[in-house]
Amino acid sequence: MRIIYILILCSLLSVALLWLGQYKKLTKRAAACGAALSMALAGVLLLLAVLPGNSFYGKVLTHADTQRKVIALTFDDGPYPPYTQKLLKVLAEKHVHATFFMVGENAAKHPELVREVQSAGHLVALHAGYHKDLLKLSPDEVRSNIAYGKSTLEGITGTQLHFMRPPHGFKDWSVISAIEDAGLLTTNWSIIPRDWTNPGAQVITDRVLEKAEPGAIVLLHDGDSPKNKAPREQTIEAVAAIIDKLRAQGYEFVTIEELAKENH
Image (cartoon, rainbow, N blue to C red; front, side, top):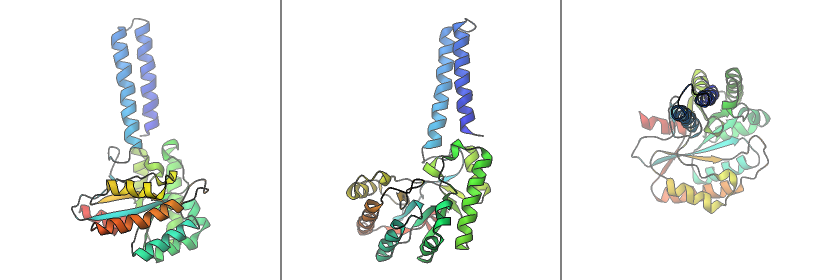
């Protein structure tokens, strides 16, 4: 079921209840209370759809339940030259493997960069075929978007994908169902330093360090989908500092695939 349909129904129900109260088919108090409850339900359902850290609509991996000091660095919206290459250089220098949630449209333009990420030992995962809010698409459009992205990345890498992060982390029953039907696990995050706003490398670093804990998933960006205009130098600079500081605290960096095994 699409969340948008429920939001529309809740809005219509609220209007109907208020109308009944106005024309004395219900007491005004009962009508107002009913309308308020209906809109409150809509608000809660919408929050659950856009907030990353819940599995209300279906299974979502946001962290690992572990006491081991493992943490996963993940990067969205690529591949995006020259920033993806610069990030790969930093990760190689630090001997860290990460997970790249890629956009199929971008991968089709830069297949050599996708293979470079893979050959460096990083995990390639799906972000979307096209970077669109899946909540705003029809069920058929959602499935088509996912299928295009998955087939594009699998065709380039020659390996099967297992994880997908929907754009913005937004999901409802229909979105998660489509992701699962594609053989993928919906994967969001537990730490979001909002690096895409370019608040400064130190700010990005501090936000990650403040929230770091065993089993955490960090959301960062090597790309800028769908516009592909914003720089990612601050993220790259922050990643080097994040790795050094967390490693000094005893953390080990793992891919999402490795982190997911901590839950078993």
